[in-house]
Image (cartoon, rainbow, N blue to C red):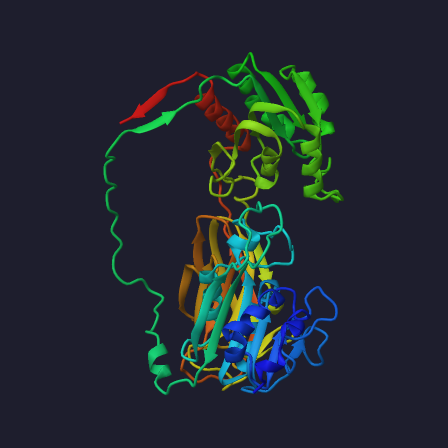
Length: 535
């Protein structure tokens, strides 16, 4: 054991940037003596962004990407060889967190400690969604619950016990606004102790057999009647100043003409400003319905041209262009969601556009629709083994090879590809087979929302059988997981998957959709104050 007497605050001034904030307190309250006094300790990612940094204790080994034999995923140390693994503000930078957490845990002896600190979403990030305000390399935001979910995904639940899970806001300055870097401590601290796996663990973790066929009958129940009328409240007066964004590529502008003419008819006295690309400005002026036409580009004239300016830079230019101006109403008539952020970059009392309120909370008038030219198109995506991770076996980029006997029952073997998909019907074909070409007796599931929503699950059948599922909402992290069962099998090779999207014919044309959005704006704002009651 390392005596804490040999440690002092002077050593703490040279440890990692975040750990040094806590070092003196950890000395005083016994944290270091209890969890970090072993002879063999690893400090993962200890260097951070600073030079001349010490590991957390004098006998600890500092591990970074330059450490001999370390590839960023697998530590060059034997199983059960370490007393503690200390990881401060590193996990949030790692894409494949399951493999890495499992490997940190692998090198711990029974009785050793895994210590992880990550920035707290509501202390450090202080926003709901990526990207991070202060570090664009952060892959995920953390709360105590989401950190525990990753731990539980990566580790055998019968092999560890949680000894600490706490919010550390020591010295946190709650007066600093979210757009400024936080002061004090702003992290979640987690400690787990590795235990000897009980002999009865397989019995506890044995899952029931999952069948493909549906059990039972689904019954449609009538909706309950409303206990009170639904009331829709309109604005207090018609808008006097309106800005309309039609920031499309060449050739799209003319499709908006019916909607633009209806907008002018609905608000004949309003000051109407149009923002469009220079290539559409002439056609806009010829319509004779705008008081002002502002030339501004989010995209290039031709969609095939490369965009050399970032979206952030263009939105900054937009803010400067309209600095000091306030509109009663701002409308984005582009159906695709890639321009919706323009509405946040002008000052307007009411904002209207296409999209779901949960995705664009700044929309006061929203129309959830699917783009007929994008969402309705059929598609095929092939994801090879490079987009997947293997907890058992080797991945050479072209395929994942799993040898017999190298995995345990119920173990997650393969997972990925974390792709984005739009609402539609899909079919997935997994390219997995043994040496005879047969599909192994494994289980699968298809999930999203960090594993919280299951889209499909079952037993793997013949190689030609596809797995069907439906998406009602877009997803950013579709994950396919393959699990081992207790059935013996030979050498397996996984070469990725194919995802087929069914094409559909959606209802309204985009010309009709734009007119519908204007009609909704007219309904909400054109007639002065009133309350409509729907029984």
